[in-house]
Length: 208
Image (cartoon, rainbow, N blue to C red; front, side):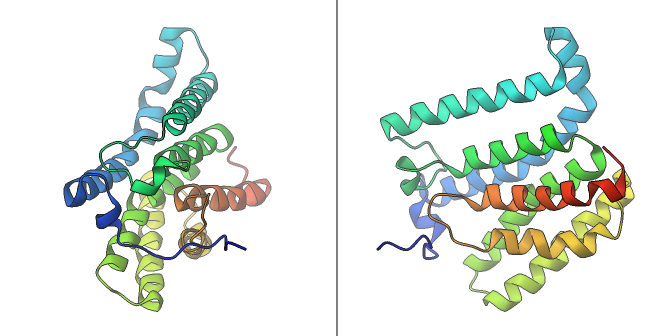
């Protein structure tokens, strides 16, 4: 019986476009930090201009992404920066888009959305690169928790995220990225698992 776990592989070798594709993928990943900025700074005015509510816009984007991913899988093709194996399974981009969309639908406040999405945008590439450099797993976990902790503290300073959440969610976010699952990308688990934690704690926080 085939295991649901997958082995770690060299991301550069599997990237469409080789090293250039890998770099493009990392840059694209990091650029996701712009999503909450666009959402909170321009989302309301844009949604009003097109005659929809902001949650409706988010839902439409998710549905379009799902439809586009279904077409891509039907024809089994990949684009520059994707991994070769993504021709046959839901891509990291699609999983990440779904995760970001769910954050904005279920937790649409700056205090939560910014640290969650920043963690995916910056934390996931950070973990991937230090692994690629040959850092041992124990050190990867320690460095990554420190890095994600710093991101959440930054969000405390910039967006009034409760500072103590950094102690809870830095390790949760890191460990949510660790499993190598065959059909669910860590772009999804790194957002959806902490999001579940936020929603569970929300009755005690009262920000939504």
